[in-house]
Amino acid sequence: MGCKQTDNPIVAKAFHHNLYLSEVIDKTPYFASKEDSLFFMEQYIDDWILRQTLVARAEKFLTRKEQNFSAQIKQYKEQLLVEAYMQRITNDPSLFAVSINNIDFQDEPTPEYREMVRLNYIKLSNPSKLYKKIKELFFEENDRVKATAQLELLCADTIEYYLDHEQWLFSDILEKEFPFSFSTERGKENKDKLDFVHEDSRYLILVLDTKHQFQPKNPLENKRMLQSMMQQQKKVLFLKDYQDSLVKKAMLEKKVIKYPMGY
Image (tube, rainbow, N blue to C red; front, side):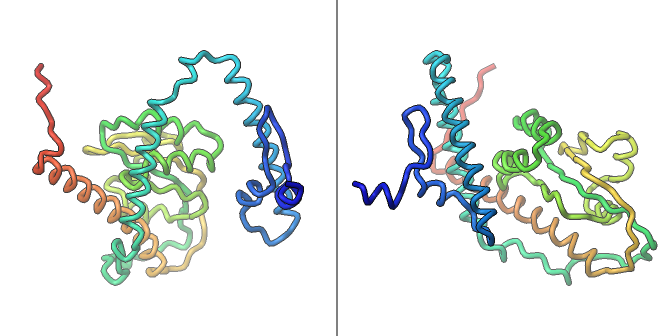
């Protein structure tokens, strides 16, 4: 017993729960420096203590009914199962490859200074049951890392989105990508949080930052920007068609039946 404690000591205790060193190490990503690793481990321990403290408090004061999350747990498990399966069938990037040679990009004169923008966008069907929740996370959550993680879980691979916070894009390239005038919509709203409907889709666009930068003409770079977005669109279309085919097959096999509402 003593040997086990030495090999895997307890690093924290909270409300009859123990946190072992092995769990902390398992949750610690690789860092080149020892100082970074120790800092992350200390942060993980502090977060664990806070979580256990809040859980104990909640369990003490919430009623049994208020503590019953069986419906949410079932829904979350189903969501995770679907997400895991969607990742499995899309883990081959060659399925969604878009050749740069096939991108029809007109070699137009490039101004010396071009507007560049960092943005996130989500394209939803209109209407969408996820709209309110996604909009709240997308526009109001200040912690962008936390918001991105939750949005990726909600959107999975069935909703078109772009949530890169670091990538700078040329505004004139975006004009070619969206089925509407990006600059016109920005000017119309007069703000950096855009929420509007175009045809059968709802677009949420969050402009993180803009700048003007001297940029020589570079058709290859422009094509690569378009290529990235086109690959994501191809993936979304593949999954939509695949899901539709699964439902149709299940209905033909009488495994799924949809009854009339009767109103």
